[in-house]
Length: 294
Image (cartoon, rainbow, N blue to C red; front, side, top):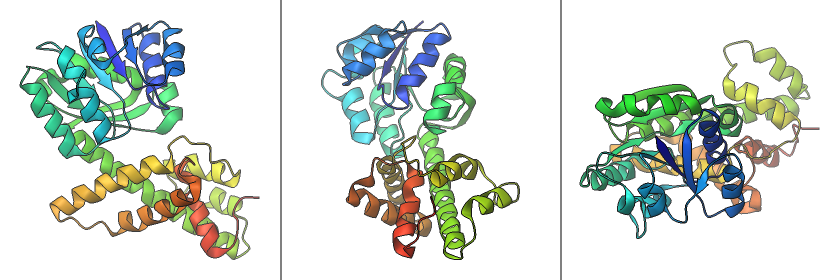
């Protein structure tokens, strides 16, 4: 089986490498030629276009920044749809609007192409070690054909419903992660303002009900002043905007997402959009005029 992989960014590159390590054959494409060369050095084949990737592949995986990029790469001129054959499968692992996932799937189905939306959670560390949480939307009848390859990239792979439900689940995930980071930031700034050592606060609460994967992953980085991106603030803004748009379409309240996206947009406007989303604490530090990290 030949797998096409389009999108070799922070997440896509290690995911592609894990497929190669597992013995899958890969043909890849990305605008970043250095990233392509790095994956080719690991055993992949490079293709000059999305269409060519599709022509050479039984399954095409896309890992792209947002909805417009997916629509362009899949449905645009020279896109995946022009090269894929009837009966082949597209797995879009980008985090995009569920409405767009459904639109793209409808167009692909006219050519007999099956689509799954399969966004991921876990950031760069889990992309590297192949333990991402992968939430999948698409036809149950075809899921068995892709489950094993997804398990190479993920510690958990869950079919949650029909097309679009993968991205609904990812939006739910991103709302909860944003709320966790905001709550952690608010708490650590409060402790610092009260002259209580925030590192000792972290150690004291991590084993209780307030403990979480987010707390364990982000608090040590915050305390070290390390905002090297595992997941950038600007990307979380994109996900929260998709969540807010979806919530509005469903008349579902989203006050926490509204509050956090405002903080993140403020930091992005200051040139901090490429910081890790744990860098949200900088908004609280500016407001409180204290610094948590030494």
